[in-house]
Image (tube, rainbow, N blue to C red; front, side):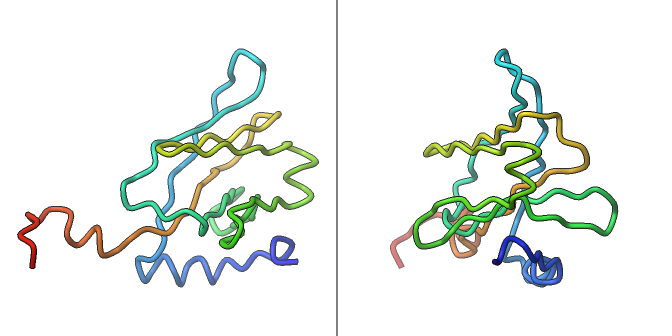
Length: 128
């Protein structure tokens, strides 16, 4: 299964080509005792190509979950479901990630973005 065998080199290749970006997830405890991290979606965010990773050390990348690009459903590793009970909520303008235990290491939400929109972001639309 894809989520069982993470391929850190594939992520690094896409990052070097400026095809992926990530947001660091900073978990805080909420009133229900769960830990929540969230961020506002950038305008050039492309849904369906997302992944949640965590790094325990400087050269480790562990996959927590990936998003199926056809159904947009999230698939989590058995370890992530067992130890953290990861849950995700997506809204039109934001993403929230919930876990039961305080995560250690660095958690990142990787996503693809629209490179063409970024190229024209500072330009005036003149119609040609």
